[in-house]
Amino acid sequence: MGVLAYCPNVHPLMRPQNTADFLRADGRYGSVTLIQGDVELPSAQDLLDNFRCVIAMTDQHCGTPLPDHIADGAADALAGYVRGGGGAVLANFGFSHRPEGIGFGAATFEPGLSPFQQGTPHWNAPAGPVDVAGASTDPPCDEIMAGVTGSVSSLWANYVSLSEGATLCASYANGRDFLAVNAPGNVVGLNTYPANAYDIWWPSYRKLVSNAVYVACTAEAVLVVEIDIKPGGDPNSINCENEKGVITVAILTTDEFDATTVDHTTVRFAGATETHVDKKTGKPRRHEEDVDGDGDTDLVFHFRFGDTDLTCVSTEGTLTGATYDGAQIEGSDAVRMVGGDKQK
View 1 (cartoon, rainbow, N blue to C red):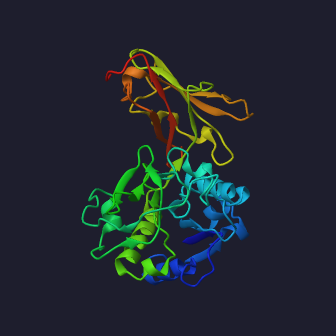
View 2 (cartoon, rainbow, N blue to C red):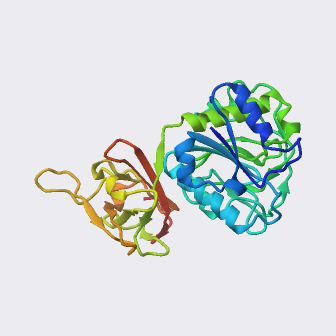
View 3 (cartoon, helix red, strand yellow):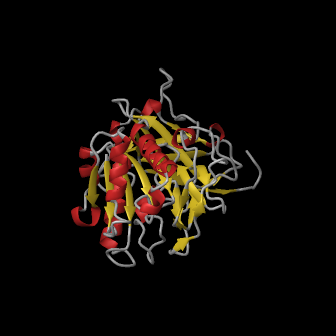
């Protein structure tokens, strides 16, 4: 596994080597490699080629705000890595609001990736003790909290909000969000700086961080794909009073993912299947088209609104499926409901 630090603090009490040391002592990860991200600038493919999972953090050694090329480079690498099937733990100060702060760039916070969104202001929020007793017992939160029986406290937190579809596992005693997992289950958000020796001193803190990394490492690989609901639409307006209305959704081919590798018969959007079927076989038809005009082939689907589980208060739609070689995929995009405010 990799400890990925951008602009790390070099002080012995704050250096990411502390994180690498206690994860190595945990014994569950084999080799643990420390990567100085602002120097090596690893790509998504570099990370995929070398690590099953990473824990990523930022600090202010390169100045405040974090230089754009570092923040955006980190974001692109992490987003591509997770979309490619890697597991990640995102930690402070990656949630520090940009452009003022030292957080990760925007790509990290696209749908289906980080379980936390950057909040304002960009400086540190009050932290303190974590409400361990009040933590969720639902999976995978229970796996992360397993064996965490003592005190867990943090010197620093960022101002954050919970991402759409993410699960909040634990909060600080003051009510601020501490620990969350994204919808696919392969990205854990830790609103704490896991290199701080004062926090690491507590055995339960080390146990919790190690468990979070283990959950990210062992999560079933889910490829996070880019989808476009109502291609060309902005916003993606849907009449939620028209049960027979058809919603077009495209899986986009990108540098990291070839949409034509998806088995179209496995795809579901908000619980619905492709409405265009072969009259003889009853199987979903396959539609390939370059919907975004970038010169490559995308995969296009059509779903009847009445077959989905979307309602007049939905703000996001999620597509799931599998590639022909069995890899699971998931992608989400925003929706804007019009036509009423009652439930479908």
